[in-house]
Amino acid sequence: MSESSEKVHHPGEIVPQSGIYECDCGQGHGYSTDMKGHRFPPLHEACGGSGWKLKAAVAHPGP
Image (cartoon, rainbow, N blue to C red; front, side):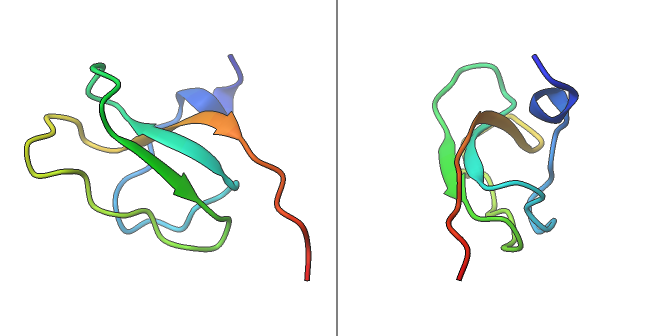
């Protein structure tokens, strides 16, 4: 895995790369599709994780 897929991004941070992110709690129940430049959403209330990890990069077409 690449370094970017191991980094944990916290809710409210700017998304560095468009992709599908999963919460880092290890249960694989929380997913978010985010676009570069947007902010990461909060985790679900019942989630014990602390942030989002890149699961799959997604190509985002330019303007």
